[in-house]
Length: 162
Image 1 (cartoon, rainbow, N blue to C red):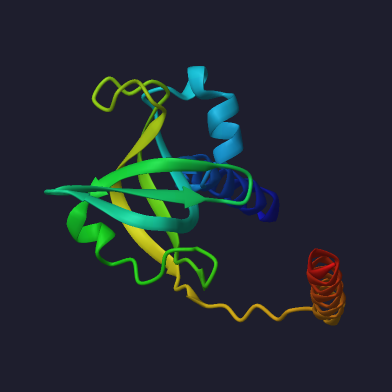
Image 2 (cartoon, rainbow, N blue to C red):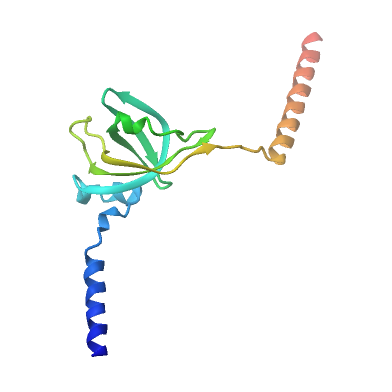
């Protein structure tokens, strides 16, 4: 009897694991671009940091996302793009967003470029302001170079007076 219960539990676990939606796992952008021919038109999930800025085009907007391996333009509803609080740049780490939609290797609608048309949008992690600390080595180098520039300027002026 115990053997049959173990077998039944194993069958249930295997059946459940096969029914899990593997498309919910996000694919890296570099893998998406490298295998673009095979994934063209497929429904996929991608995730990355919103970078740059939102470019509004009426009901829809463009945003760019970067997952650390590559970046891609995303076409999504403007109401979703407005939910992004931070876009990555020199001063900010952008919101990390997860998008489900369709990848197009050469989108006919958008001039033949590779892009991603998002059907669903989720903010996974909110971005924040970054504080870039300047290293002491860079400060010392800047001071020495400034001093050298002043000496050269002084010598140039002295030479010009003669």
